[in-house]
Length: 237
Image 1 (cartoon, rainbow, N blue to C red):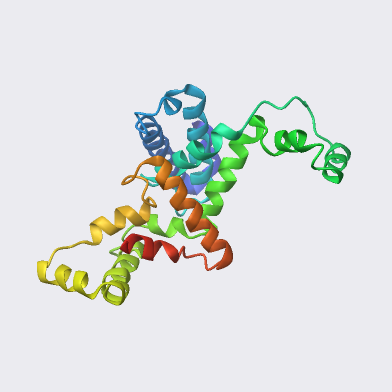
Image 2 (image 1 turned 60 degrees about the horizontal axis):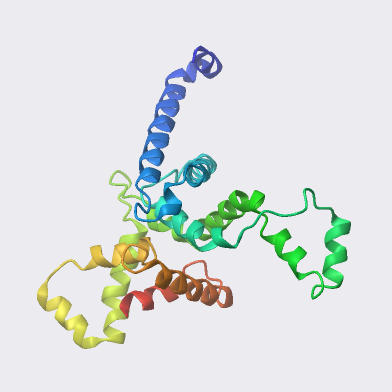
């Protein structure tokens, strides 16, 4: 700890702030990981929890401005749930470019070897991290985790997105429902925020959510806007 103060010099207090903030983030990640999918046996395994912890900490460290927010563990857990069963122990200890190029020339004959190469359990943690990173940063889900900044008078993106769905898209799709919502004078944005932020994970059975995610990402691949636009219409229906 003394080294931290010395290295920071005049910025020592900022160094301590950073240290304690990081400690709080780690505690929060640990707590959320322990509460992730309590009814799924897979997520009670120590190596799965360690992998979740590692990925979430690395993400928070790389994207310091966004850091870790509660709920990111929910996004990560579904990626693990969907991808983990397909990874296997590879019979090959070390891959080389020559070996892989040989397989690719005859993929029908070498389909098992190619499968092992792309689904090597030793690469599971790396693959899931980059999947989460792409989902959060390239497909725009990170913006849903931005928090309100009253000092800068910035409205969170999630609130703006929700209001856009309710006031602009809902009337186009279902005028009667929109009129009913207005007549009730209720804040339905909280419901929509849960659906948007967690991509329906907290509302539907996991297998159904996996199918929804497949459609969401397939649609975005055809229209790479970085906004998951199809999500708005899925929320309406």
